[in-house]
Amino acid sequence: MSSEEYYAVALSRVPSIGARLYRKLLAHFGSATEVFSASGRELRRVPGVAAQTAGRFEGDAPLREAERILRYADTHHVNLLRYGTADYPPALSSFPHAPPILYFSGDQQAFQHRAVAVVGTRRISERGSRQVGSLLDPLAPHLPVIVSGLAYGVDIAAHRRAITMGLPTIAVLGSGLGNIYPYAHRTLAERLGEEGGGLLTEYPFWQKPEREHFPARNRIVAMLSEAVVVVESGLSGGSIITANMAHDYGRRVGACPGRPGDPATEGCNALIKSGKAQLVESGHDLISLLGWGDAPPQQAQLRLFESLTDEECAVVE
Image (tube, rainbow, N blue to C red; front, side, top):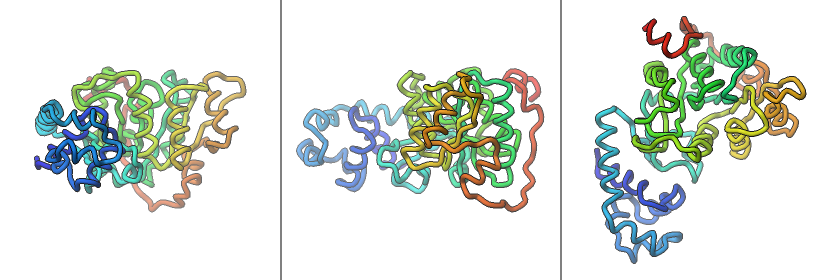
């Protein structure tokens, strides 16, 4: 642990210091260490730092939280990805509102892959499950990382299919690494790092899942991915939020069409109708959307038992 890492984590824990102000402070003082060495008067010279905000540097609560976080990271082999360092995911670096600190458990090489997010309903149908397979299977020669949110339904189907195809997969969480949610997916979550992917979150390890965390989680999914594909979604919900964010960020968006009038796919059809998403029925459509072209021949290692539940996987293992 370096002193700069310690103070960078502490700075991220100061109340009212969001991503933009964090960057302003680093740009003004040159380092997080110097930020904590500054007087209240010096802090107030930075645009956006009010007297109340400057006063929050006087207590030691952020420093104590940073100590807890770093001890946990060291014990549990968690990587702290700091904005402005080589370890920070390149796809997020250009976004001024991307989290200043990310916590990652897994293989950091995953951030060097092209990334595709697959999101959708928590109540996936058999047709939706088949669509996930038809989307991901043709991508295997291109070796992308598959991004989703570990939720029930489409998310967990995408993670499982990626593992089956030998593709790395990253789950972005709306909670800390000490509170995997949903708990039923904990066994699979622990495997992601072993398969070349991992778990990513902006929340410290003790943070429990809260309703407001999931839209925030969705923005990371959208920023991290070259494209976001929606499989089965109603007119509202997390997957539609993610797709709209991806569109606003200039990412490619795809949606699997459904039958007219079917509530389970109204959101997908609406995205296509509005022009925010391109109609995507297979991985070949997605490859065309991204302009990836032909991939060199690769032999992806298939995984058996892809349809098993977490409990059944534990028995097999």
